[in-house]
Image (cartoon, rainbow over all chains, first blue to last red; front, side, top):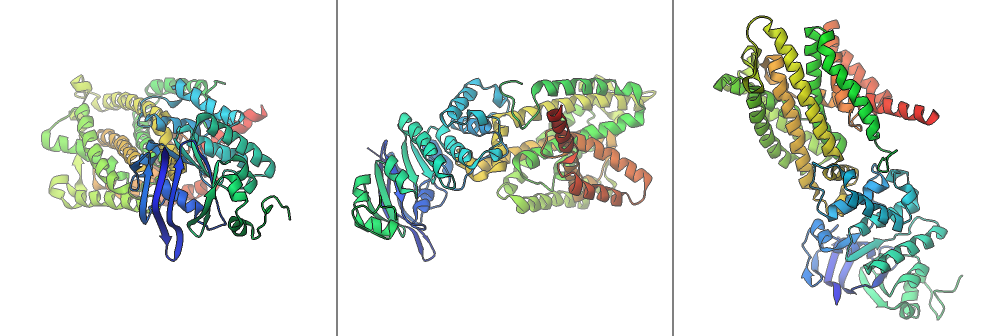
Length: 257
Length: 334
């Protein structure tokens, strides 16, 4: 069954067609990569689906329901969560508090102002489990602003994950981290996402990462979908290779030149 | 250190170790100082309640209100109206009615103000407080205009009429009893605020302060939470206004005027708005500072201005923020 479906979705900024007539379906438990050159509209598409930006026209269906005009809060409640390309955390709160907040919000407990947050042992235990899953246990009591870039990237994903979403958008989860840390971060994310059966859509530039982790790849160019298919199909698509690499041929993606 | 201790705040045993001796000293204070000093300190405690309320918005929600004189003044005028038009002397009635009025008005004002943030929020709060000031100033046949309204302590009763102030040494006994009354409410307010800022709701406010976009993407309805914070903040400050008026004996439109909003900001910044106890310390210190500045020089505004300048340049984290940092360094070294 399709978890998410966009129908003729459009978002224009003046003459720039950031999202141009995009009809995309995402099935449950897929791990989809959104790729394309800079300015192809990948992040814009994620922004429109997650309600950071309103769409100009078209429809968004989630679990068969029209959510085109639903607020951010309603979409989060329905089960759509996201991380951000430029890390978005609560910098003055500890890593632990960042995660507990997501859990409190999911459980509808943030309206409670007469109980002490740290005495909710169920939430604390869950937060510690999540920090463990993302290898952040040692950083539990560090403020988010004091974490390294790689740790901040992981915490950003951990926050979205703590909402227990059905559909998780990850906007460049490894941008700005060293090549060595990249693999580690992606392994961590992939194991959590696969383990919990979460449907994930990841925006990524590194084609090695894309080919290694995705079931399906969607290539965007100038706001529209250029091609989509399995990693093997995309590897052998000359048109895609031209757009992404500027050269084509049978081994375009593996050639190191 | 307990499992849940976090680096961003002192641990619970440390808080208890600090609070108990302070409470003992405050309880015993009237035995050691004269009536004037008690009165002065009571003012300090009342301003501390106002600043605590104000800081829920500034320190915890990241909204700088420049119109908190409105809620302080509303509390004060509500009590004064009860005296003037209904001859009521019970402080508990003042508190119930005053909280109702400040709650309703801060809900209405807050509804308008939280649609904006940053400078726009500040300007809106300022403008709305000035509307109230104008009303108090112009509708003199209701509010007494610049002459104000008197609230004499002689007609006041505490604890539903159990304590009144008639006969010999009435003023002295009023100041003493009122000190304990205010001290009790101050403790209640402080405890209540401490729970609020450490509750899931308080954490959500801090999240909104740090990053409103991300808070939204965790499913937190940010505008509604800011509104609720505004309502709570206004009500705390309103309670301070209610408690202030019998001690002061008179309410005039000055208390609604913008310089008083500025004083609330000053107190909070002086103590340190990024700490829980900052506004309390700031309010008490500011009260002494102002009283002594006014008593010692005709240019007291100049003196307070100089203090503010030094504060912003040398101690941007305020008294408590600076002390906490020094204490932290000391502990690391030791």
